[in-house]
Image 1 (cartoon, rainbow, N blue to C red):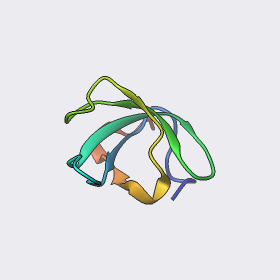
Image 2 (cartoon, one colour; image 1 turned 90 degrees about the vertical axis):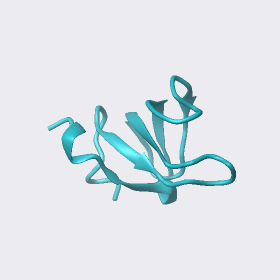
Image 3 (tube, rainbow, N blue to C red; image 1 turned 120 degrees about the vertical axis):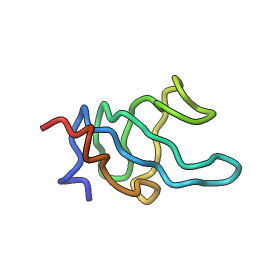
Image 4 (spheres, one colour; image 1 turned 180 degrees about the horizontal axis):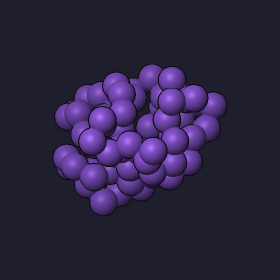
Length: 65
C-alpha cells in the first residue's frame, strides 16, 4: 500500500478505539505509518502518525497526482 500513497494524498483512516473513521492528509510516508493532519472527525486539525494497517484507502477525489 505504501507505494500507492504519496505526500499530499488524502486517505481514509479506519475507526479504532473510540475514534470513528476520518480523512487524513498525508505529509510523509514511512515503512510502517504515514504522518500528517486529520481533516475530519474528532481529531480534525491534529497532527498524527496512523499505522499503515489503519489506512483503508486513498480518497479518489483527493489524490496528489
